[in-house]
Structures are given as C-alpha cells and as structure tokens.
View 1 (tube, rainbow, N blue to C red):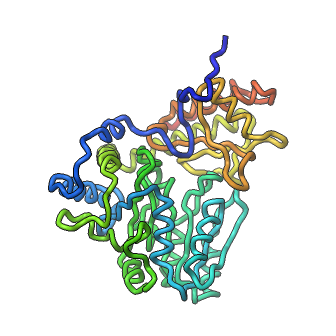
View 2: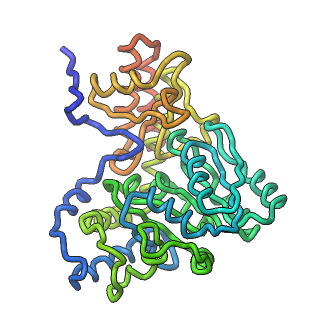
View 3: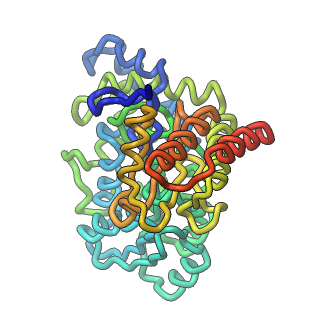
Length: 394
C-alpha cells in the first residue's frame, strides 16, 4: 500500500525555490533569549553579526541588515538610489527581472528595458551597446538568478560594462548569494541585495544589502531618498555600530539565526559551499535529462546552481505533477511564477538541500509522479544518471 500525504501533513523534503529548509543550528539558535535591543549585550552581538556578514560578503564596510525579507531590500534600493531625473535601464530575463522595472518606474524619470525570452539570459555586449547609445542612463538593474526560470545572468561581465559607463548597478542576488560565485565586489554593484533566507539556510525575515561608496554618495545627494521609513537604507548605514541607535526594533530572533548561518558559511568556506550547490544541481540536471525531460533554460551553461527548472512536455500542466510528488512521496517542489506558471517545475538546491542525495530524491519524485500520471519517462535511467554524475564529480 502506497503512503499518500494529506495536504495538512508537512512534507518529508522541502525541495522548493523558497522558502527553503533551514539549517538545524539556525532553528536552534533562533530559540535563544530575545534580548532588549538596547541591552549592551545585544548591541555588541549585533555588531559582531554585522562584521561576520561583512566577511561573508567581502565588502569594505558591513552590509545593511534590513528587517524584512529581501523584497524589502529591492524596493528600498529603488527608492533610495533612483532620483526623479534618472533614466534607468532594466534588464529583464525573467519574471523577477521584469518586476524590478515596476519599482524603478515609481521613482525614475524614465525606464528603458532590454528584455529577452524567459528561458534566456542578457548578453553583456547588448548592454554595452545600449549604454553607449544612451549615455543618460544612470542606473542599471539586473537579476542574477531569475528564480522563476532557473536562469543566470553574467553579473560580473555586465557589472564591468556598467562601471565603464559610469552608471550604478542594482543587483538582485536573493537566490544566488551564498550558493555560487558573484559577490558585490566582483560585479562592481552599486547596491547588491540578498538575504539569508535562500542559500544561507535561514527562514525568511531579513535582507542583506551591500552598498558601494559611489551608491552612498548618490543616495545622499537624492533629496527623495526615504528617511524615517521601512524603505530608508540611509537610516541603517551605521546602525551596525554598538554605540549607535537602531532606526526601529530589529528582528532579534532572526538576527540570532543569521549569526548561526554566517558561522556555518564561514566555517565551511564559500568555495566549498558553492561546490556542493553546483554538484547537486549538476546531478539533478543529469537525472532530469535522462528521464527524457528537458530543462527550461535554453542552454545548460546558463542554468542555475541553486535551482533546476524543468520544462513540462507539451500538454502537461506542472500543477498536477507537483501535487502528485507531494501526495505520493512527501516531496514539495515549486511551481513557476507569472508567465512560467504551469509550464515548469522548479527544484531548489539551496542551503541544507544543496547536497547530492537530494538530487536523487527530486528526480525520483518528479519521475515517479510523471509515471503515476501516465506520462512516459525513464525513471531507472534518471536515477542512474544522478548516481553516475555524483560518482564522477563528487
């Protein structure tokens, strides 16, 4: 008799693109005493966490720790950096990249856009040509990993071009930082927005935002940059110092969890963390292809190491496959978003689930669910391909 999981029963594996499973030590640490934010012990602790975040992100000064999940940081970046007279170039290679343009439009004089198919990425040379033809552009926005498509943009190459054009770049690195190379320094970001709730293995609740000196100068010169607001980046610039007040009450339990996540990341070492994310994704992609399915990204070289997007065959809706994988195997997967909804399944490889064993679970769940629903896949070949890739690269 096959076990089927009721909808109210928690899944055995959460292999989603977010929220992701949290590391056990993060959850344990979130159970610490919630200290008063002006207790000297907490002020000293907060400073130590900010300094660990600086080391993890490799920035000249501590990143901002904003008290909300990274959507807050992305909107705050738009509100703080973009002035009324600015022309913004938004790079849209997916649902989230496209979405930033709507925030930019609230603040900018005009938003220009380079948009590609949502299974593709932005060509850096196209950006170079566009900036050469439009020298009035002051800000460029780009999503590193557009999670609804599982595709990557080359932010280091794009960032070098933007810097040469003397513009500033806002980077959405929410689901890439901590899982792959490409930090705020290497991509020359003006504002680099991420959070610990993806590859760092924390629950949603905080933003990490690295702001360059040039971006701070522009924010300071922007009379419309918010202050005394949840979107006010400038209010948090020096809040990391134990001698300075907080703009408002920080999320104490989430700061406790962030401390544990940073300790783990720094102890394991960024390169080792990136390597296990990459191996898990590579093994998963091998298994998906061997099942007889296709990847959503147009080319495997632009597929993310933190999320595998699986294209559904013609006439197959992703929704029932996701439901069957959960009901039959207790494996929770993600659907597409916006224009990709129903067309693909997303398998997250972030934080605790960036381990090769989870590639086996994901491929088994997708293949088993497809088989149960009457779709023709080669489950044995899929599982063999995962194992072979792990053996070859692990």
